[in-house]
Length: 518
View: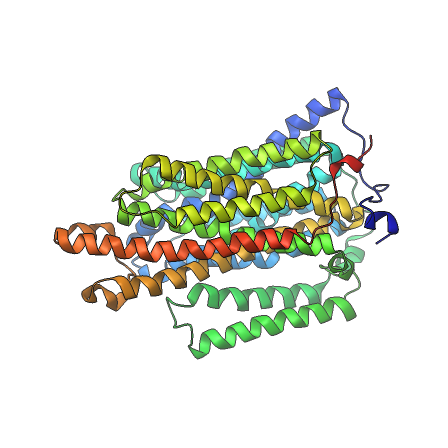
């Protein structure tokens, strides 16, 4: 890093730094509003399947394989995310984005017409390969066509669309399952994908990298890609299987965790000593702001998805609502994410008073406060408490949603924009996996201790709201209290995740948007 960077001045000579003229502003706004179709369909796909799983299990008589519908997508999406940054550099943003959409659409089509569970799982894996690149590539493309000063406005739009799709997904999946068929949860991706492809082909004009296809293939970090994908899969499998399919201390889980950790060490060595154009350039990890942003994204992902997955449990098992109603109860959290994501984007684009660091620290603090208040939910908590506590946590999450992208993109050169953006997406996603796994283990173990003896054999697994209605009122009260205690403990762990988010942000340099001239 240069001395100017140490003093919070960043070399912006290879960035787009000039604010957009009004005419071009309207053109870019029009295009990015259409580009968000890609974000919408990728985010929608992550949650829409949640309310279709029971129908799929019944049709294919494959309840024991149902977890693979989510796991297959998650494994490939997370594993391939970092590779898209380098592909975007080698083959160009436009071609790489079209490839991601194409793979996602092919996977969705296979899922929609799947005659059996194996085909459905294969389709989900293919869709994951494409879906893993969509989110990061949208941020990369925005960085290419929008100035640093305007970037926050547009990335805030992307974060808002992501939050909206996340809450619409379960509701839409339930509606399709009830009124049509679960297959429409996958068919719905096809028109959204077609619109996105049309927008990219006709409206996106970016430089196409020179060189023949053979030359570009030689530039791909094949060894790094193989090692990274293998290490990620080896690490994610035990996080999904632990506590459900296998005990956490089983040899399978321990071996896979060890292989995953060793795989990431091997990946680091490959990137340093073998790769000519590494997926994760070592120079990125020498910048303290970039490394801090990786940490912020990791812990924010843990907190966000941990809350999204387990807050509905409270409403279903303690308050006695349906799964669809529980999804609606998440609205304060999601609305907090949406509005604060937009607000923080506008803030960094319009003011020179607040640094990215302060925004991330405050966001982490609000996550901590929101999680702490949520851990106090009990059988008699009021509507005002639900709304207020979840809103606080959502505002904190949304403040960070795209601030780390802006901060990292500002301190790296243009040649590293794609790599750092893809890696930030990767750390947030893998943090989400860790968060859900950790909260799942803590919740399940606590519930097994707190439930009446006759319900402890399954550790609470497979215990549904119908079971709660089929027990005497006295026992039902005990069961509800067991869920309250167990969820309270799980949300107290989210407090630590929020605190670690703020601690990670402390290591960011105090870089402000005020250095952007134009």
